[in-house]
Length: 79
Image (cartoon, helix red, strand yellow):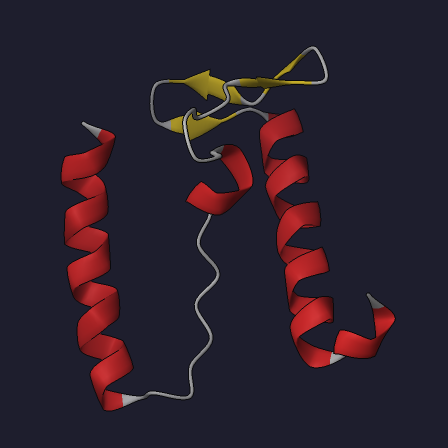
C-alpha cells in the first residue's frame, strides 16, 4: 500500500523537479524508514495513530527531523 501511494507522490515530485530543479525535497519516508524496515515505534513511543496518520509523538518526531534537515541544508557547517 505504501509503495502504491509513494509511486504517485514520486511521479508528482519528479514532474515538479523537472520544471523547478532548484527545489529541495524533504521526504518523510526517510524519517521513518532505513534500508530494510519502516518503524512504527521509536524509543518505545508510537509514531502512528492509525495506518495512515501520525500520532502527536510522530508529528513532533517528523517536525524535528525536517527542522534538522532544513537547518543542515541551509547551514552545512553546523553539522
